[in-house]
Image 1 (tube, rainbow, N blue to C red):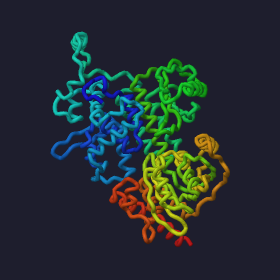
Image 2: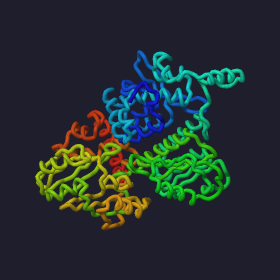
Image 3: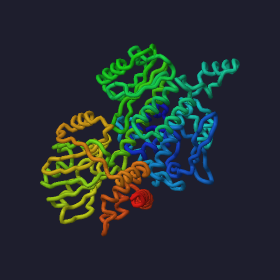
Image 4: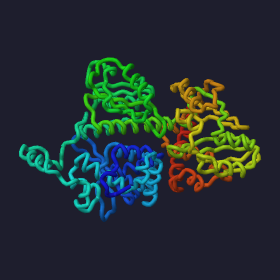
Length: 580
């Protein structure tokens, strides 16, 4: 992308499309730090948790990030959403105070941005570079948010104001006249014009996002996430509510009007349906306006999907007397972050044997690599376990029988969506394989809908998959969604599962509440990879490579996870002995 032509500067909409092309939390955070906070690649790799601080001013908390070296550093302002994402990434990955947040080279950061850009379906974005993200950062602050050039120069690390000259057009005669007449009336000068009118100013929206970020961190259920979102937005907009994907409301908040709300009279001035086909937009809008009753005459409506990767969890709707482009961007950003929060909560329950309902499906979908391989080679696969390693990937541990292992690995290594495969152990009862799977499979679809991968066997081209779902999940909706997404599958059994024993329940509670997502994943991966066996089925280095982390990081997560689980087991056992 050109670095000088003003017409090619990224727009906020293009920047959001670029962020939607990210496939992992790391990619999303890197793009955010460069495009939203103006960091260079060499500065991104030098960020440590110790560099993040909080300052109180104007009745609110503000996040600052110190970047650079001891000899030459600067302070960068992080907007609440970016600060929340950075803290969350540090917490989830259990990064120490003095450890680099991104333990890679600056060149790898540049390549990461190029990889994300190449995934977009817009040819104009496929050549975006890290320099373009800094250009977008400067252009947004100077031209859209009208922040004083001296502040932009300081937070962006430019040596002089001349470095920012090319972001400004020469003023017209009319602009010069208006500037001096504004001065004579004591009004704001052109270098600091007021922000675009919105439902709330920048400070109010920033406070809203900060409040929402704290609430999302504390939320433990989807209902709590939706309620917190509506409550936060209702403090800024007239009304906020969450609908399902068809526009039927689930959660609602209205702080600005004591009366009821009637969306049948809402005018869709904001055009918030960019993520939907035209026919679906009509159905959704009609449902939105049909299912909420009361008074909302003359308000504008903004609708954004609660979306994480390719999964839409529902719709976020806000209504206000007037809305501007900044409101649409803000609501879309909230929708994306809430979608990610819902996905994160669902993945926390990913592989826990929760009490509930067990559903068993049968599938003959040859698009699945295990089904196709078992059909062609006449072998049998059994899933030993599945572990999430990134937002878009699962680590499969499968036992294969009745086939030459080399032939199976050759076949699987060329399968679409399987990026890595290795032999862990070859025994008389079968060979254990480890596979990194990125394609959408029945197992990953089951996991995305809060299911636990309980069992998977594949033989002669027929897969039988059993998943456990909490009783809080809409089972009928799960069955309908999975059988629609995988037409060559059907539900063959449904049964209630029993409560676990007290000791097992205590350990599972520790797995759920005390372990971070990364600790839980590492512990499970080590177990299924034979790390705890003698002799070991996998070394720490092999396991770390499969999970995309360094060996010290893996050891760190593993030690902490073992300590927490063993503490729970020993203390629970001691308590049982004392009570006997």
